[in-house]
Length: 477
Ligand SMILES: Nc1ncnc2c1ncn2[C@@H]1O[C@H](COP(=O)(O)OP(=O)(O)O)[C@@H](O)[C@H]1O
Ligand SMILES: O=C(CO)[C@@H](O)[C@H](O)COP(=O)(O)O
Image (cartoon, rainbow, N blue to C red; front, top):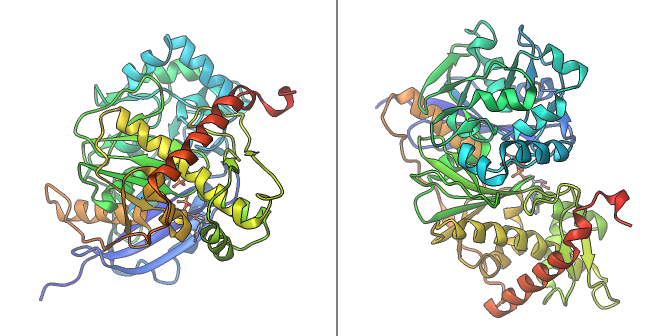
């Protein structure tokens, strides 16, 4: 009998670090750990390392031969020549670079020029806009290199590296910077210089199954990738599959064999972790829409879910869920909006239902944007923290307009990273297939006609309030 080999996958996400230890042959999850991150949009990367240490404590990694890190995309980590962090990492959901984004889009000649150069039109999430935003800050003068969260954590874990010249990234995460092209499969350093005013050292782009270093205990380090790319690997997405992930962000993405370039900016033309592409739409508000609304109506998440399921409909109550500003639609200054509040709708159950509908209407628009790029949507795989909500599961098929399957609850980013680690360890040309159990949602009694009405009202409220929501709050009145 051959000996069991163990690999670990890490998800350094917005709200927490999660670690899974798996059997390299089957993907069976044998051990898990997690630790929270600070609730902020600018964070000292040392907090991620602290969370990693807690999440992987108590012998979690015993016997692990290879580790890979999946990380929240886009976050800007600025380093000096010695590899020390010179500014708090500015995360994907920090909208401070809204004006810098407009400047950069206009300087290059508009959205189409960006889509042509990088496959994506930058929004304030993209690292390049953060470089422009930070350019004149005193700390920026000391910056010699720029990296992403997964690049930084991988570098911290590597015991056999010298300095910033040894930092690595991968195609998937590099494709969310705004200075990497899916058409040339390479960096465009002139875009870094345009944004920052001078060149910076960039991580080397490692191959999908490369071993990029070793930890102090001798485990091999795989290249790692962005969290959505890792989730695609964890789900083993196939053509016709669309993943809808409801974590801190809401994302809808598919794998393709050719790059996309959407000049409307709705679909980002990312690369995946295997050598292909990952067109993706991302909203800034997902799982926390439900927790914030639950708090508003004084319910815990379980009672909130039951309340949403008990409601027969939202009766014209609409929640535009842009609680942290929004990225898709591109309204960085936006706030949430409640429309249609009457004595009849002013109750926890209708409010819970409107929150679930608002969240799903945003993701339904995201799935439509993928369809508009010619991406087939044969079935949707629903995952992320808020996919544990039975109300979300039940309303998703009608509102998203496709068959929905539910991968068994799990940490698919960490699992995908573990699969990449197993791939790097094996030396095989393709990753080993790991089975995934799929469930189906309970029926909700929401007809396609009801769903179309809900979406139409949501779209009407958005269209009519958009000019107001585009303004910073203090300038609206
Ligand atoms: N049953 C549930 N209903 C609604 N939201 C949930 C439920 N379980 C977890 N969540 C939410 O999921 C979020 C975490 O999801 P996750 O996918 O781990 O996010 P991230 O990867 O961004 O850290 C938290 O905001 C949490 O409140
Ligand atoms: O910005 C994006 C994708 O472009 C986000 O999806 C981040 O990658 C954060 O992911 P979560 O922490 O929500 O999983």
